[in-house]
Length: 435
Image (cartoon, rainbow, N blue to C red; front, side):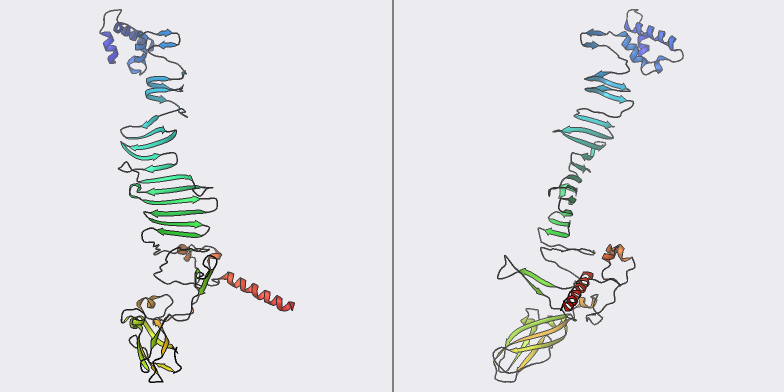
């Protein structure tokens, strides 16, 4: 028997609430038959309400219990609310239970869901901006704001953050992900702009951005260095580097040149010079010397500002290829280059003429013997059969379409150049036929 009814039966005064409650229970037990009132969760509340009073004064209603199929109110305050459907301007309750919850609409300051001592969520707003927080016990794990999601782990500062918003370039959106927020972190992002799109990665003062149309930008505030190691990059279009480029292994190109501001008109012109190419790993040394009584010995290391012995271990097959008398007409003859030195003798044993010299030598440093284009003696191999494309290359080089097969067997490296050549030949043929 419920404690409430036991208490009620202890009273003998017919006018007491306890006596009336006991009488009502006995009456309802007879109506319900085998269904005992103590087994019905709602019944005790009904009994207490029947013992109370109802007061109605104008728009004011005070009573113990209201049972209704539907209640519509601007504000509802209760310790607990149980309903199939609830419509109100405001609800204040310690517990809210709705059988079929399809939506909750309204102005809210704080709303919790779940076990407050365990996993739960908090919904609130501040300065007209909505927020959602997810907790593991008392520890905040995830926080969702207007334009970002933050992840937490053991501190009030987020460990990672994802932000979405309008592109600072205009005409598009951006997405960024920041890890280790408290320590500066690693920032990754993507922007879709009106004229260009790019992705970037930044850590501390180092920054890399890859952009479409084709450009890659790198920046390191501290040492101004950008490094690629152990990677393969395929790129179409111009590749601009606004700082030094250091390549630790082979650099292969179709042609080479320097491009600088023209010394005489730097604001309006550029100046281009081409590299000198050849079928050897040649090194060129040159200088100027003065004869003393028809002879002089030249130390290439000293003349080239190198440590003594450098030339000898760096080179092989060194030759003096030019001696040009600058002040006289007497002929000059060199000796062989040995230990980085050579002697020049003039046919006039009294000559004190000034002359210019040039020495060519081939590289013989340790790396040159490992170069992909060198033989076992460190000599340049000038001709190579093209590799047959098998499909395995695509895994490493992302080579999957015909245009990207340039250089493999059956495909020219510079197809466009050959197309231009055919055009020129046709133009020349047309000119000849026209004449």
